[in-house]
Amino acid sequence: MNVLVYDNEEQIGIAAGNYMCGQVLAKPDSVLGLATGSTPLKPYGHMIKLYEQGAVDFSKVTTFNLDEYCKIDVNDINSYHRFMHDNLFNHINIPEENINFLNGNTDNPEEECKAYEEKIKKAGGIDIQLLGIGSNGHIAFNEPSDSFQRWSHVVALKESTIKDNSRFFKSIDEVPTHAVTMGIGSIMQAKRILIIAIGENKAKAIKQLIDGDVTPQCPASVLQFHKDVTLMLDKGAASLL
Ligand code: PGA
Image (cartoon, rainbow, N blue to C red; front, side, top):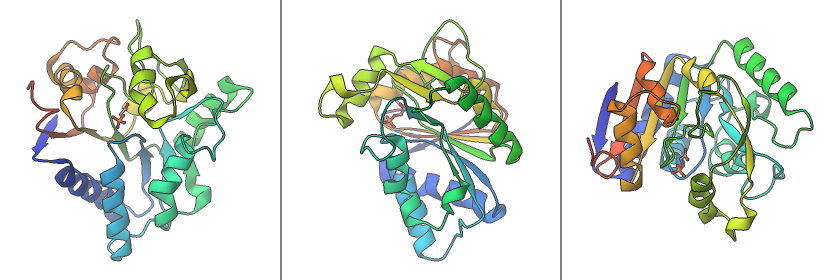
């Protein structure tokens, strides 16, 4: 694993934004796997800046987002669909038809998840997957459990995740209890993985990711088996290494 430690979040934003855009420059029709949460905000900001400066063109790019809450309107301020449009898609020239999300409002989640996997395959697979990490070691919404879930699936969110994410909602009772998420296999099939962690509350999960046992109790630990992983950490997230 390529572990890079930065002084602050601004520096990570620039480095991670450059990394993602570098992929698009090398392969204009890249397939990007994208993430939501606080962590990718600065990288997305830098990608927008590079686009505005004319340094990168997203017109041939395809994207697949990692996950989405169940039973939340796509235009709701807390939907990941809305998050991505507000923080990236509305500011760059990616065609709307190239943007893909799991549908958390489907009546047939199994079919939905199967179709999503097929679509990723048909697009040629994900060239680079951007990931955050939960304080409990989750990646996407693959929560700690007794086994790795291979493909996209519906998941009941852990209390720790509901608590972490409640900061975006008016009250904790409003946080959805379920989500649809890419599986560990979907993520592991990405050709390259960029994982970012900011803050001391991620330090334990990062330590386990890098030199703990590979166990579904820390889903991120599976990344030890991937051949091309880059970690960008601030000093807080790297504090236990
Ligand atoms: P965060 O979430 O970026 O909001 O910390 C990361 C995650 O839960 O994967």
